[in-house]
Image (tube, rainbow, N blue to C red; front, side, top):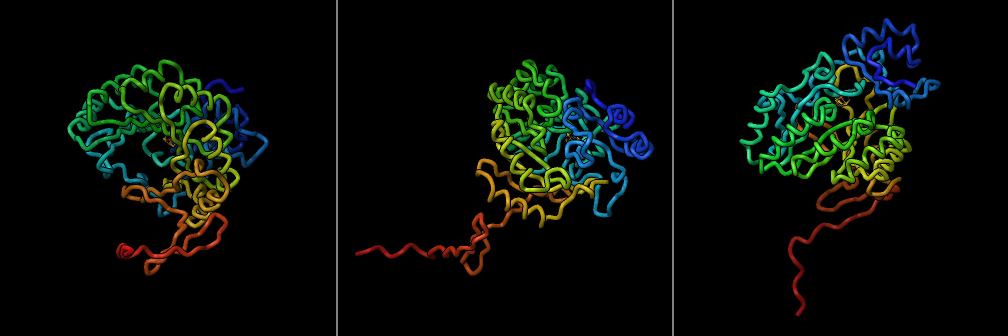
Length: 356
Ligand code: SF4
């Protein structure tokens, strides 16, 4: 049983998660991209399975040093939309507030892998945070603030409360959303002080939980989510579609059902981003659309996330389907969940004449 985070290939070897002979290759990866596996995630890994989907997400792989020409250091274009340090303002009514660039685990497919980790962009200074809050306060169109990073729930309750108190003073901010993996990868961190800090702004607060495989939602993770939800915090999910982790409909269905059973509404299923060294995780969009269509035929509407792509370069999110309706000359062919096709008539061009 591992009781501390594993932060190097040597730690992983000592815990039996990688063979000692792989250390030179994995040390080269770790010199480039941060490594951390939390005790909760290490405990989930089946050491007898060379294709374990939990290990695949967190244990480094020599293929991470193979760069594909289409990959980019900043795949979703944060830098192009950052007016002040710590803020990404891509859409009119919401901003990202990146308070910290540290995570309790480092995902091997991370879209911000060039920014996070011990050598990453660190924690926002008090001055930079004040500048970020001033930027938000000066723009009444900002309705929602999304704390992301890194993982904002690695911050201490005291620091989180400072940020939330700063947001409390901005009346036009009505929604605060946290993007995090902590309830799953470090559930013990979701204690009373942290829960109270998340609610300290008095705003409607959402937690978007990142998890990719149903095994991540074990009893401790579900209990951590319950502590948040029972305190009045709404939860939604986000997952990344990953080859070798969740690229089959049975796993996706089990994952979405696990979210719903935990009172976490499935929100986004992300097509993987063009992050450096992650080609071995990527599916084609056609494969993703086929899985999204299969999921629609398999599980309840409550279990349906939006399958989306962050358009490379910072152009925002686009839903990728599945496209269930094809139109031509005002008529539509609508596909049902079994694949059957049905005609849908055009709308009347004007109201029907009233009867005498
Ligand atoms: S928790 Fe999020 S930000 Fe941190 S490594 Fe994973 S994907 Fe990247």
